[in-house]
Length: 332
Image (cartoon, rainbow, N blue to C red; front, side):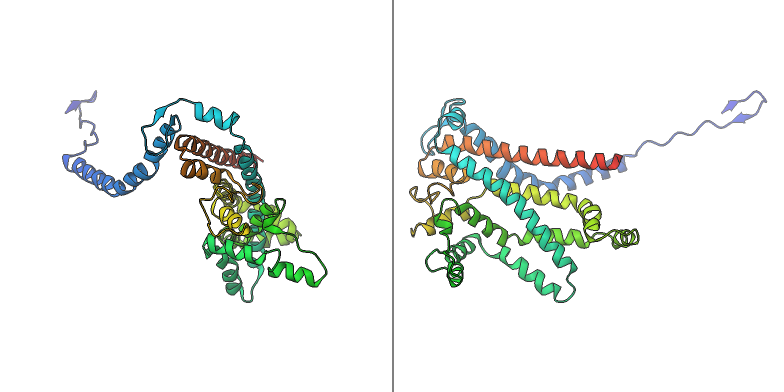
């Protein structure tokens, strides 16, 4: 009790009660449940990502064959990778070609097909299913099918071209056309990107198109000013996904080169990897060759570290560019 100047008494100011022990106990119990539910995910990340990553970095600094004790050699594997390996330049150039071409065409092809399917009103479910089905085919089976279809001697593509008096190319047997043929194979199986972009296009508010039509905007203007900015995050996902996919391009190139060369062995034969003339030799294929055929595990680990850094750098740059574009658009 306190006394004021007028002689009246005033009640003391009330303070917020401190948390009781019961509340603290409940919070602690909830925290334990959260940790318990996150434990499987944390263990999986630690065992299947963090530990392999750290082990790869360690072995990249050693001379290791997978059997004997690893000998520490410092940065010698990286020096040989950038200055001494005569094949890695070809593999890196092929991979870079695939990254640029596959990324651009895969996203553009998915966007084009999705834009067409979004406007189809009759039989749209059937068309969407048919466009998506090729992405469900296993990569080995899809590659075998494509090599058969584009067989220079008996394939149906060159047979049809012969009906019109056109000499069909060698496709997978031609060093100049082997990578474009692999690109066609990739586009044929890009249904998952198409479906994701289609969902984004269908999610664009219809009010925006109606307002644009009232202002006199045509279909192309609506696509450029409404559709593209709205689905930009999905397109970025498609670009990042395509870049990582191309950087890890392995199965299709190995199978196509092996079958086109006439060999019954799909993997493991160093003579057919990259056929023809190393035109389909990608960075991951050369990594596999060094690690599991030549048993240069230390050198293969160094290549894996470089591949991881490049993939991370590509992704970081793309995300940064998108954020910068979005901030400039917001300011304008």
